[in-house]
Image (cartoon, rainbow, N blue to C red; front, side, top):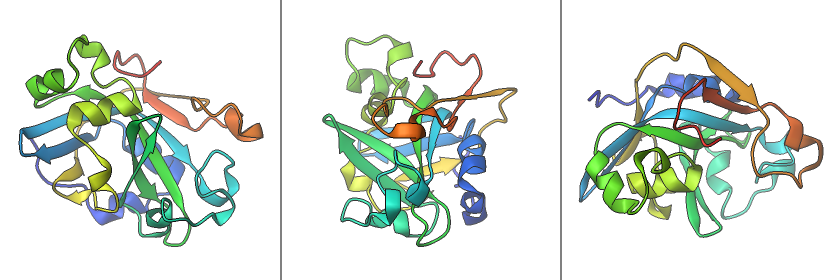
Length: 194
């Protein structure tokens, strides 16, 4: 397993480009139980101040969104419907953008993932943003950290042959933002959420 985190310069790409570049990278989480990781196969970009679907729409700065105003490559976790979701902070400092990691393909620590997602077949361990955090052991304690170092980091993986794009999921109440084609996924990957 490649243990070298992606460099800071990787996260300095424009948000929509970074959302695609993350596909094929490896999301790695170290816990006391061991290491679990997966190839990132689905992302969604949230363009901050101009994006009604973003928590930071209109430069909304709260305790929850504070980390989005920091440098790219920081970890933004939040809870939705009792599930912890993980995002990569992107964009320039004070320009609060982020990329939701929607799905990963299990790689290392599959026995850990199975134990954390009992009663589910492998395909359903990590094929959604709340599922993958549970399987990998990502929690709110990761909030504000950096993907540049353990315990939660992103490392080099593979270059996908084909990337698909479409509307984001679960944001129907956000006006025109619901139609922006800012969801990206590895084409034909069985671990994509839908």
